[in-house]
Length: 184
Image (cartoon, rainbow, N blue to C red; front, side, top):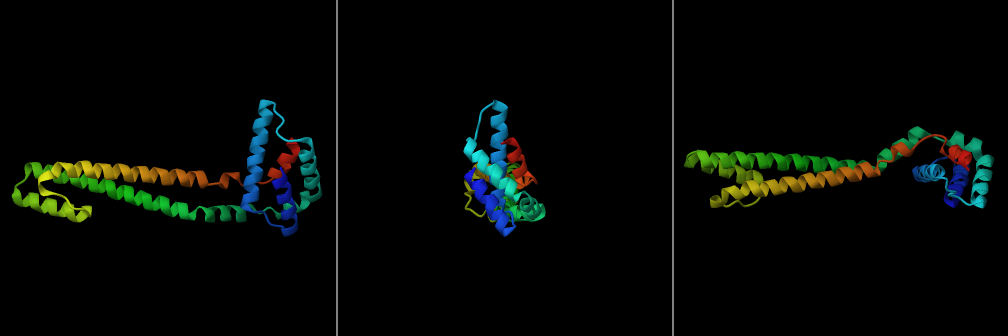
């Protein structure tokens, strides 16, 4: 609560919202709504009174300073590195899946084709794999590429979850401080 009071004072002097202040306000509003649903008092009377006083003194300035477009642009800028990592992981997962399919095709060729086709297929797989493959253990290529594909898929899922967790655009809403003051 004290951080939100400080945020309101800062916003009233700078006339600019920050994403961090908006996220703190959203999180507090969420906690207050949850506490109200459970019938629990989540804030002390003194803190609530201080918040309401600062809100009433700065309500016009706070509403005039709110710029949703700028806040959403700042939030989007914050997650760009995670988007890049997610796209890279998606590309790696697709490449690993392609390599696994190619290893299965090579194994099928190894089982059914003649010696020259076998060697060509094995050479192509070795070039594409980027790691050493032994000629007499062709069945292990499929298993190894399957493991690589699973690892790449797991890395992609982790990066995707990190991106989803860091996306805070839904927390940028107008009138959050007014809603908090109304709940208090």
